[in-house]
Picture (cartoon, helix red, strand yellow):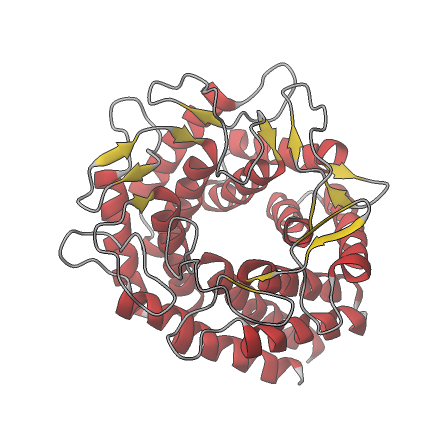
Length: 402
């Protein structure tokens, strides 16, 4: 498959598969917002709680789709999602974003998880660029100010994880039950970085740019293990490593997101440093994380692979990461790995019978039926963004080869 055919396949799945599903099946017309839970076979759990992350990811995805594809029906979804977030998730008294509301839009968990606040910044900044209006940007900057005031570690650098409604650091800092209860994590820093990247693109605010530069260098100097070219995952407040897990998806996702951040800043010296790191991460991911069938496995440790399941999001985040290194180097090996990931995804991750994508399949490509298609963590952001990135990058490549 050449790059044009690849691009056409990405666009078809994005528009006819992913975005169409979310527009047709997930809008809660009775109670507002989007349904908090839908099973793999499209059973709607109408009274499920609704998460800030899912709603922010929906807003970001449709705003980014509108900005790239210019289809007004995507902007209508953006307006709907934005209004719901503003009216139900924003803490208008203390600032920041609540974690969870019930199906009626009433707050049921008022904690301020920095990860979720970053996603709302990400969404509002993208939406502001779509609408060409300042109101969402001001709200995004207000959340930025709260994160910098309360969560940024002035002494040792980096960001703490989670706060109460009143911005008091919590004892239980975890994003989910699967995470370690540590004060600093790769995952939260990565998504602050992507949020600040988009906020900087939208505002060119010097303070945002300064903190974005700091995040990039923090990844290069502290979070990236330059002996193995894996990102370290969990730390205490003094940056002492508290885990030996390897997340292959976060590795390759981080590689291209950090490069995107450096490109936004326009710092050529920093960008060249990031490109070298991104390509090394891509090489290590190929060597250690890509299975014989072309999929990327979930997790490992220094001894080897520990989880061979194939989750939906690493397949396509890795695809973008390898396209990124193909752009950096022109080396066809990266393109071939990216193409195999996409072909694998289309064959095994897409839920052909019921629409959208499986959460994960095992090494024999048997889908897990217990995990939901729509939920607090399952939104059109990873797969939608990967399609948009692939389309954008292949269009850019076509221009440079004419």
